[in-house]
Amino acid sequence: MRTCAASCIPLLSQQNIDGSNFFNRSWKEFKVGFNDSRGNYWLGNELLHRLTDKNLNRYKLRFDLQARNLSWYYAEYSMFEVHNEASNYKLRVSGYSGNVGDALWSLDGMMFTTYDRDNDPWSDPSYENNCAVRNAGGFWYGGCAHAAVNVVRDRGDNFRWWAASTGNTLLKSSRMWLMC
Image 1 (cartoon, rainbow, N blue to C red):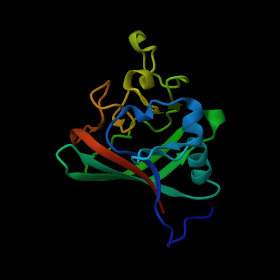
Image 2: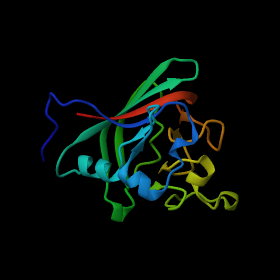
Image 3: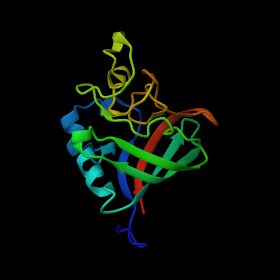
Image 4: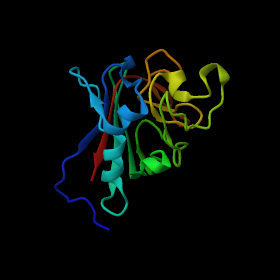
């Protein structure tokens, strides 16, 4: 297995500037990626899969999170892998370190969900049993969202990072990085 070169540059994979409705996108859009002129950004699930394939590279995942009180926090995961589209971009993640708590602990093994492709196990008929419909944003969901970085502020699970050890951190912005 090859590993990342020591001199590699971190790769921005997601950026949510303000918790707007920007991430309420289709499966096809999340597959190829998207951005806007304000800085909101999603790299694309297909590229995330190709970059994190266990046979090619081994990346860490890092979140830089700005709370609404303007404090900065981070969460880093020593193992991050996104499987192919046939597996609905199943997430493999483990090895937390950081100062905001582990909000991805329940998402290891979850498949990606969008409003038009429900792959989460959550059940609530008022939202079509779909976390992406409830939160207005695609992501890996379990029992809706602890790591609610692609959701609309003040909707569903809110734009937040929730961990049992630290509680609820309401977000102003979020960034997700692939790190070597």
